[in-house]
Amino acid sequence: MGNEQKRRKISGLVKVILAFSVTAVLLIVFIFLAAATGGIKVSFLRILRGIFVEYDEEVAIIVQLRFPRIFVAILGGMAMSAAGVMTQAVMRSPLADPGIIGIGAGSSFVAVLVTAFLPSLYYLSPLFSFFGGLLAFAIVYVLSWKGGLSPVRLILVGIAVDALFSGLSSAFNQMTGGNFTGAASIVESNISLKSWDDVVVLGIYVAIGAALCVFCVRQCNLLALSDRLACSLGVNVSRTRLQVSVAAVFLASAATAVVGSISFLGLIVPHIARLLVGNDHKKLIPYSALLGALFFLVADTVGRWIAYPYEIGVNIIMSVVGGPLFIVLLLRSKKYA
Image (tube, rainbow, N blue to C red; front, top):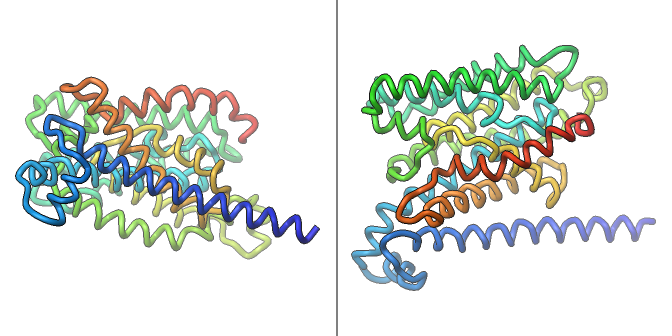
């Protein structure tokens, strides 16, 4: 019996290492594919040579125009996916996703207002959007709770809140004629015009969010237990749920303030990650972040390539892929509940 458990443990460890390694390699490959996709065609070797060996004008253009977009996609995917894992842990629902239940829309609305009216505070826009995300989360959580969280009720309330804030953002964008480019890019989830400044801003907030994730790993595992069992272990469930919620909303809001609200990313990635690395959040959160970066970058690259010279927004790609999966999960919600 002991040998069998040991074999299972080793097999599980190998599976986790393999999942991390393969995903990391694929991410690196798609970074170069994304860099090579567009009007300027360059080889991988030429990109490497132009970055590390000698100056190349075309490679320099790619570094200034494409690489910020690539890194924004990676950071945004990491933040959204990690936030999705923690949101599902807090709400104990596999159907919870910051982009679906209104958190992304609430964050986006505040980010749009800050970007339009206080452009000098751009570096603080993720912080402002954090309060919009908290407001949306509080509304969804309070209205969904009725002796527990029903997945169907959660989704219905979340869709209503998402529609409200999305409508406000779109209305503002149309009322201003789309004159505020930064605000319009948030509403439309357009990352085509991102710069290195956006990478720096998002990178700072994602780094803070990563530190919060480290603190929340144990709390997420405790929230997987029933409230009664957690309380018997001396856990303050309400406080723990609030702490994890704040971290999740912070990450989702930071990403939304830069890339806009992306639906289904925080829903799809955690489910795939659980199949590959299990339910332990010590492995699940970092792997979901890595896998989310890959998913977001692939979606953005496919959107740029599939209809070239035109582009299909990453949010559209994620909706086309995530919509059918969401329906399947919704139909199975009784099992998950």
